[in-house]
Image 1: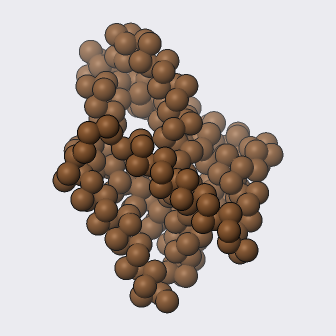
Image 2 (image 1 turned 90 degrees about the vertical axis):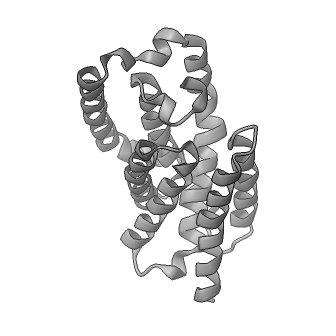
Length: 208
């Protein structure tokens, strides 16, 4: 059972991602992501061992928003300062030069990208492959590794490095709150920060 799960995990989160990156099909990853997320949601809802409330549970935000916000504010300040120092021409590039695109991303990114990713890399991965990991930290590390590797499709080291860190943060937040809503809110906050401060080109080819 464990060997089969391990092979499945590698095929789904590494081999298929690498094949997608090499093929570079037109249309971008969002349609594929949404289809996979729907399949993951159907699977999870059919599992007696999975608590369906974990797919939302918004009340968990009450106990999580303060530490999450403090960490986000510190990250936002550090990221803004670094870009202002190293690449001042890129600071707030997207909202300054393409405000309509930035607004569209602010609206649709959480719905079409963030929540589907959280379904796959948090709820599905951490539940389906739990037998492979001895504890929550190792499971979170596996989720972070898969999440970071998925971003090789953007073809740059920065996207992978930032999403490795984000994957660990979002996995641990989901484990602590049992709320995909909380993990998605935090994920969306960091993603929108990246698009706002000037790093969007590393994550979305339309901003390059």
